[in-house]
Length: 345
Ligand code: ADP
Image (cartoon, rainbow, N blue to C red; front, side, top):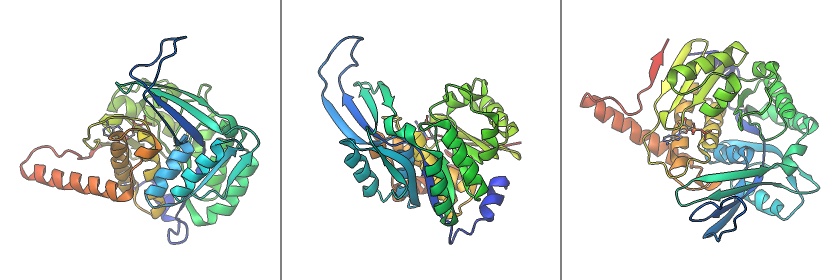
């Protein structure tokens, strides 16, 4: 299936324009582990605590960098004790930080509590992230677009700044990808969608944005069409262990998930977005990029934590190769292939 995305990608000289610009949030993730979550008003003793780089913007930037893309993250960090933690985390993964702005005050924080069954609750305090400005984004896009191919954005920073970034990115010839997470509490302006090449909601986000209850492939296709009618070139609805559905003006394609044993589903969507962006930036087709993104999402759920669970390219290539040989073996024995994609008109 060729489509508008592949046409736009073909217009990019990937030898010179292969970078990924991520516009998004950065947090310090403070995670406590306890046998159970406390009741309201209760204090309990926990068993462990971790402190790592997080935030959807940072996670997607790290995922794209682990996919071996050249990445620049546009975001804001505070001047508090968490500043060093998040900057070191980004540097360790070779994420470019030329367009991070230091703002007086606190860095964003995600406070996560996890119990023995993996159940969790999360409070995110955006702090510095809400100070991301359109001026900052404009400077970054002007400087980076000539050597970049893809922009990744999410909704943990102000929606109007995200909108400006997508418009600017689109005008500069970038392939724009919006992960509309977390689901917006107020409806996004309808004109946002025309600046989005690929929207990548999960079931919950697709349901909340479109009003169509996404529970299976057919309802995901309906939701995908909702986005296309509003101007996106493609909608890629992720369905966790049920895979993903790609909807374009040519029709829809269902991708089966890679079979894995999930232990912690956090950051699957971020691994997915980072690998999707990295693949497209390298000049790979939309289908190849989606397949790698799905392998990355599958690997992320086999490990605990958010940024620590983001896989490296060699691991993603290995899982993809294993699935291919498993599917060749099962095709020989005339069994259904585990990762066969099903095209639908
Ligand atoms: P989010 O983390 O945004 O909710 P999803 O849970 O839909 O996103 O995961 C994104 C992608 O990661 C899925 O489309 C799928 O390819 C992969 N994935 C997620 N969970 C699993 C799982 N349990 N088994 C295999 N692949 C998974």
